[in-house]
Length: 230
Ligand code: CTP
Ligand code: MG
Image (cartoon, rainbow, N blue to C red; front, side):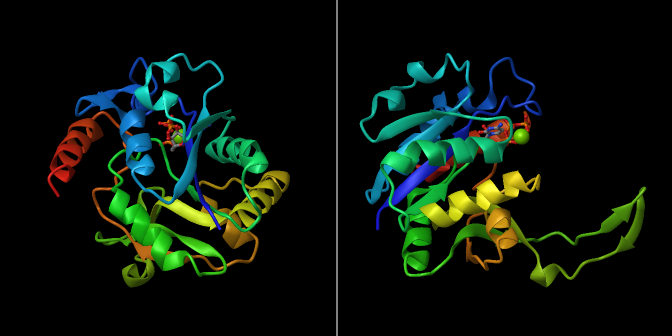
């Protein structure tokens, strides 16, 4: 079985509010997406990286990684799940049913190759697959109209990160059936859960942040620079 990467990179970055999509903002000397692709290509067992791009993306060809032989592209869709599904369709000529696909957000540029390798090693013999995730550290509150209704048991709650690693065919079918059922899924694991599967969690790192708002940029720059010395 081979390992493929899918990077949804077709978002507009509304919460960032910049004049270019956030994956093209420069952080620590390079565009966010260049960092992300480089770090995934550094994982030697990856056969290829399939990047889902916005239909009118004029920035991608400027990135050095766009000319790498192990990098392929597809056109994204309306929601993140549509972009992932389009990328999986574009992979159909290459991937076998049981091959592994790791879906990783373009906006998570601080991913470390070592973390990706650890996810692969831990899950490679698992029937379903799983995701990088982190136990929450804050106390959580369930709120209705500004009033606290309860405090869910924190010891059972994890935050979902990416990569999320599943078998090619199982992932494609789960996303297709969620889309057909009109069910909004914000990550791959939820699609597999809806299909009755039980994915694993593998503990990730707290510096694997999703660059979302302007204040995330200096933090990402700090992590990216610091990781170079690990
Ligand atoms: N994404 C995508 N296709 C979409 C929407 C999002 O490929 N239709 C990608 C984004 O490019 C990003 C990842 O999915 O790498 C996670 O989404 P998010 O952080 O929400 O990015 P945006 O949707 O661009 O940001 P915002 O929600 O603030 O507009
Ligand atoms: Mg979004």
